[in-house]
Length: 297
Ligand SMILES: [Zn+2]
Image (cartoon, rainbow, N blue to C red):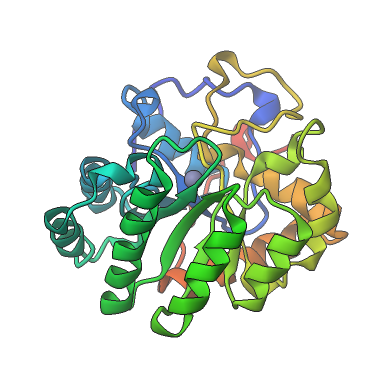
């Protein structure tokens, strides 16, 4: 077990949640610089919150490789390996071959993060499509599921996925934030949907609250996308405003509320879905008799 003496009190007591059922955080950017100094404590807090299984997000070759090393080291950690649309201009045949080799490692459970982001267009759309199609090809060849990022590109994404749908096993649109029409387009393509704390944001997540009930439980998974997207309605202030996997139970509570179901039932369903999606044999649990961490919040 990771040592718990490093920054263990980073989370105020009011934010020490504990899920009633083991959770899988399907999107954690733990190779981000902000986790460099206290990763042991972050993973320990996640386990105490009953978030013992983390799918790290690999957003380029180097970060995917670093994430694979972490996943090899820590029990309950797995990773994706891919190239994010922001850096799609890095794509080359060589990079594709290197990613394919990385994706053969047992701790790599999905191809991605890959996709289209027309919101910021840090890489031009043509490069984004080339890199995305290259990674669709990798997923088709390996049989691995896809971890997809899409922002303001819903229509083009659906066109491309429609053409590839028969060649790939599963795909999840991670951090879904779009509208009802886009959601149903994805569900019609038999895709999975990842929800973050976006709907905890009363300024911009309002429309999602009406949509979450449309997602079948066997298509719905949950994620923090940490260190980004710290939920805005947490019951206590967080110094540094860094999001982390231990806060996932709060997001599950919020989604359960807007779906009109219990936190326990939603936790159970999303974990069952994530295990099947990523081909995980079992989820990691962490037993604690330390009442200080029993999630009384
Ligand atoms: Zn993303």
